[in-house]
Amino acid sequence: MDFLQEIVGAPYADKGDEPSVGFDCVSLVRWAIKTGTGIELPENPMSWRHSMEIIHELPAAFARYDILLFCRRGLGVVTHMGIANDQRDFTHADHRFRAI
Image 1 (cartoon, helix red, strand yellow):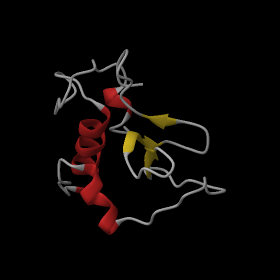
Image 2: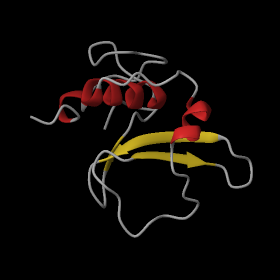
Image 3: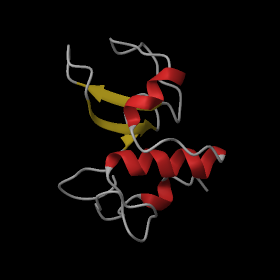
């Protein structure tokens, strides 16, 4: 079973760290990477970019489990993030509702 499917419907929780508690978008990505790979990412996503390939325009294809960071153009500030499921869908924590 895909571990990302297990968190669909988890509540929104600022800095939550497990499906029963809930997640914000950063903690969801951190949990998914740790669950899937054992790698624990730092809490501040801006420090992640040192080990990532930065793409300023949407690529023609996403790989499953790519981390998608949404930034304000010109500011370099991460405003939202999630994990790619396929070419048209991603798992993320919507601050208004829940993990979707």
